[in-house]
Length: 322
Ligand SMILES: [Zn+2]
Image (tube, rainbow, N blue to C red; front, side, top):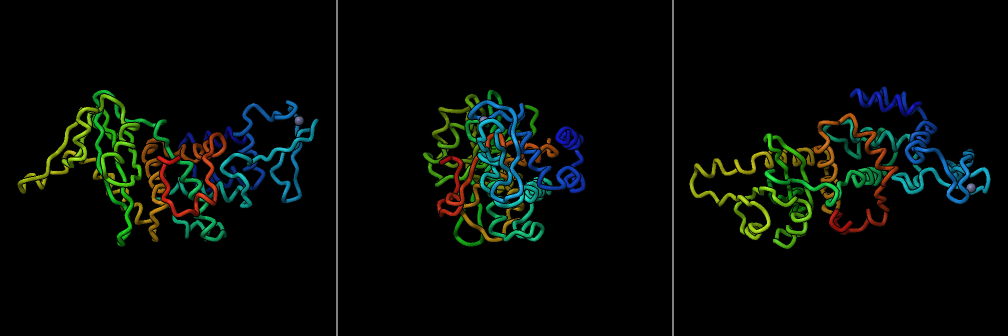
């Protein structure tokens, strides 16, 4: 019953901290939520098919375990979910997800570390796991299509030092001239080969592609209905040079402000995760109230497990490698 009322409140568009703590006052409530997402038809033992189980409680090691009544097979409630193997209380996890999606401008690891009484490194790993969950895979979310414009440009994101993350920004413009979805994908270099790795799988055939005059895009003439803007030669042209990529530049401005606002120490290897979050939020800007339930659902139904080993390696994260 709890889940039904929780979703109703989210749908009605008012889901603040007060509602959150009403719905998830303790660990049990969070465990129930995961149980309902993981076993929507009820628990069925994988070994013997029995539908009755006990919850093992009391001993910390046994917490969150379900045991089949007949064959005593044990299953962890959080196994193969975002919360796999975590020692952090689920309520803190839920609150972290809630805070990340609830605040419009995002929340910093430092702030959450204070609120949750967890050290900042652990919070950062937890947040990165959630950002990985926000990933929209290239194949799943193609953009463009017949008579649809996609604005395309390369950008650098980074701090004041020389280290910058090159990324490709693709913005869909619907036929009514409104912004559609955005994809921002880290790339290794601005060479045609690297751009193509993102462009071709992401943009549908028949799309009208808008780019700047960078010669690297010339090869796309044969693949898309390609319009490009050459380098401005007069002051008038200089002043109007962004018309072509007008909306895209606005979004890139927002991205850079958002990124600077919540991120103090720039680490190139983590930029891709932040881009996931930015695109995820932007693409769901008309259904903000659903973000919290959506992340919980993704976390349990199709988690993208990020191990500490992957997180701590020096290689930059890229969804292309995933
Ligand atoms: Zn069994």
